[in-house]
Image (cartoon, rainbow, N blue to C red):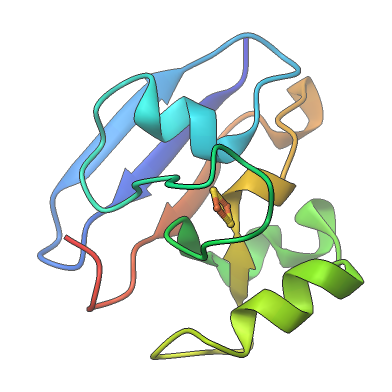
Length: 106
Ligand code: FES
């Protein structure tokens, strides 16, 4: 069961553990982590699941896919480490992942 730490913009940390095969967005919404709404249900169509992946994890989470990159064009606070949480599938290889929420999401 991968464990993930979400850090709100105000610094509040939320550590959750979810079954392997859960998306990062579902890991947040299923555990009522504030700042990730997942309005489109994970269809890569809303960008309310924008997260900033800790640089130490960037290689393991991989690169944005094309539709994700398009959707991220619409977010405020786009950064190099920006990802959409619905496009990251949690596996045991991502156990310990740390992501932060951008300022606009709380
Ligand atoms: Fe809508 Fe990720 S949940 S883009």
